[in-house]
Amino acid sequence: MFDTKKLALFLGGVVFGSAGFKVLSSKDAKKVYTQTTAAVLRMKDCTMQTVNKVQEEAGDILADAKAINESRAAEAAQEVIEDTAEEEQPAEQTAQ
Image (cartoon, rainbow, N blue to C red; front, side):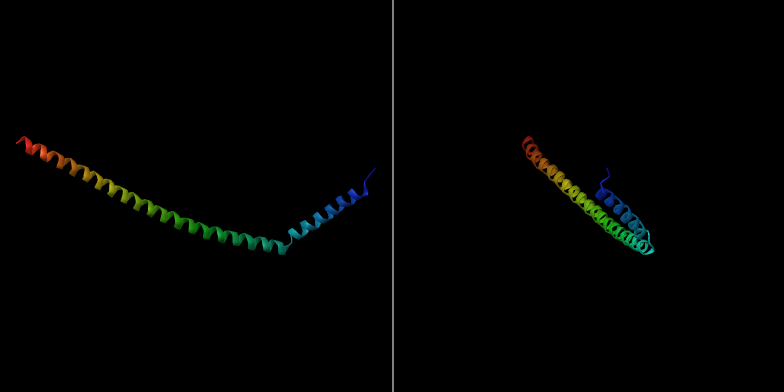
């Protein structure tokens, strides 16, 4: 009825699992977990500093780009005003 091979594999898995839990919950393992977590937190802090620098730079770039576009728009509007002023002068001179 019972397959001894399957039963042996099951019991071996239970023993291996129990031993694995003992190893994973040992003091040395906890030290490794603590050191790994500390390293991850340091990496997170470093990454967040880099992200903040990039965001600040992007904000500066965006502000500069907006200023450039506003100055170009102002120059274009000034050219339109000058062009219309030049077109109106000959018409006024012919009327006199």
